[in-house]
Length: 372
Image (cartoon, rainbow, N blue to C red):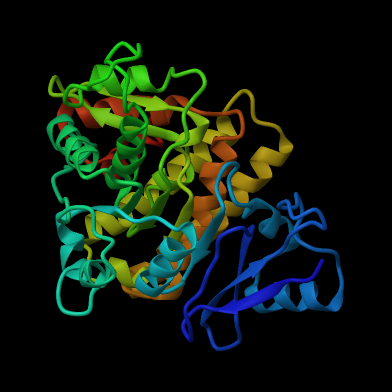
């Protein structure tokens, strides 16, 4: 197999339908290298040792085992790292052939999305915006903001979700999609001609639908390193400060687009806290009683990249290269953890601690990981 590099900054880029193994070019521009089997399915390895793939690895600094660890998660079309958010997202929306796009984001991401020529304007110009930008989902996926987003997306007949922000926003997008799948069903999962407003109970019932209806696609655009966008699990913090949620393989986002530019101006406690979340994922995978040598190797590979990225971000928090290292390391770590080892003890405890005491999960990882 031969790696096909796609420039990340020079033109509109479609990344769907590929396994995304990432390499860095000689000009430090990040590019996607995609490899497919002859049947069109994502391969379990990342290329034979021909001249092209060897050159890709030399340019990237990644070993063959690193590239193996950077496989696209099951149920996802592609992961793009270092690609420009807006043009890539618009291309993916076009490829998905959808007509009503609902956008969820953190409040801090709003300046990247609203304004002349920006993403919301572009969707409006194309007649694709389903509803005004929703920025109501708070830290940890607070219940009230999440349910409001579910109701707005439902009322707008949404057929695609775009999520821009941290882990809570990415999880909220999965849960909104799950709620959208309940058209014509009641809170207990039985068939009904009408549907009430969204509830936590209703969302949790939706994960038990059998068969599971097709969920609308989700284009996940993270601005940090919590890695929620690379899993099919989603958390909710209830009004009683209890961590709850839902999970189903169908909840895996369709496409992930990580553009370090979305992190510009981010407070250090978020930037470094979420990177430490990646460290927590790796430690949880390495220490898990079900971990095998393959899982441990992938987790440790992730730790190496996280270590390099964290050290470089101390010197330059806005460094795109350092942030991309943290993202790649976090990607390796969360996929190692989710290969039969989820949840780890520390991860589970910290999720509930975060909800109970209203503490950012990245802070929990930084403070509690070594002690647990």
